[in-house]
Length: 85
Length: 351
View: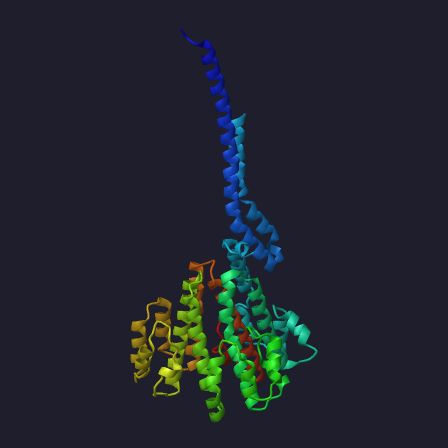
C-alpha cells in the first residue's frame, strides 16, 4: 500500500533542499552585509579621500574610519560559517 | 562620465575638503596676536601660513606692503580657481555663478583705472582673477586703450548689456558708482534666475542668496543713515531678498534710529540677527555695525551649512570666510603701515 520508493526519494529531496537553503542563507548573509558595508563605506571613503587630499597626516585615521563598516561583513561571514558547519 | 560624477560621493568629497580647508584658516587668537606685530612681523607670520608659496614667489619682485597685498590677491585667486576645479556637477555651476562677482570687481577696477590713465602694470597688481575672466582674459582687457574699448572686448559676457547701457552715463559724470550698483544688481538677479532654472540643490543656494541680499540691504540702510541720505533709496537696494524694495524705502524714511531698528526687528525672524540688531543699538561707528552684520551672516551660513552638510553651502561658507580672511590681513597690513594702533584696527576685522 505504501510506496516506499517515493517516500525515500522525498526524504533525500528534503535533505538536499535543506542543504541548499543553508547555502543560500550563508550566501545572503555575506552578500547583503557586503552591500551594506559598501554603501556605508561610500560616504566615509569619499570623506576620507577628501580629508587626506587636504592633510596627509589624516591618512592613518581616515583609513581606520573607512574600514570600520567592514565589521558588518565579518558578522555576516560568522553567521554564514555557523550556518554551513 | 556625467553619470559617474553625480551621486553623493563627490559631494561628500568636495564638502569635506572645504571643511578641512576652513579649519586651516587663521583663527581669532592669531589675529589678536598680529594686532601687536609690526608690518615685517606680519609678513613673516603670513609667510608661515597658507600664503607661503606666494610670499616666497613674489618676495623677489615686491617688498613691504605691496608684497603682502599682491600675495594675498594671488592666493585668493589661486584658491578660488582650484575650488572651481575640484567641485563636482551642479556645485561647479553654482560656484561659478557665485564667483562671477569677481569679474564685476575686476572689470570696474579696469574701467576706473583706464579712465584715470593708470599704467596696466599697476592695475594688474590689484586685480583678483578669481572669476570667469582669468589672467589671460584680464591681460587682454588691460591692453585696451580706453574704457569703451574694454567694454567692447567684453561682448558676449553676461553683464555686457548692463555695462554697455550704463557706460555713457558713467563716462559723462566721471563716476562709476551707478554702473557698479547696476552690475551688482544684475549679478544678484542672475543668481536668482540661475536658481529658478530648477537645477538640483538650487533651493539651498537660494537660501544663501536671500541671506546675502538681506545682509547687504540692511548694511546699506545703515550706511545711508550714517551718510544722512534721505532721498529715494529704491535704486540702491537689491531686489530679491525677504524685504521688498518698497519696504526698504519705508524703513529708510524713518527718522529715529531706535524706531528704525525696532521696525527692522519686526520684519526679521532669525534669532541671531535679532540679537545683533539689539547689540547694534549701542554702536555708533558704521564699520562696527557692518562687521557685526557680516559676522551674523557668516554664522548663519555656517549654521545652514550644518543643516545641509553636503550641498553648496559648505563651499560658500569657505569661499566667504576666505574672502574675509584676505580682507582682514589686508586691513591689518595697511593699518600697520599707516601706523594705526591695534585697538583701532580690531574694530575693522571680521573675526
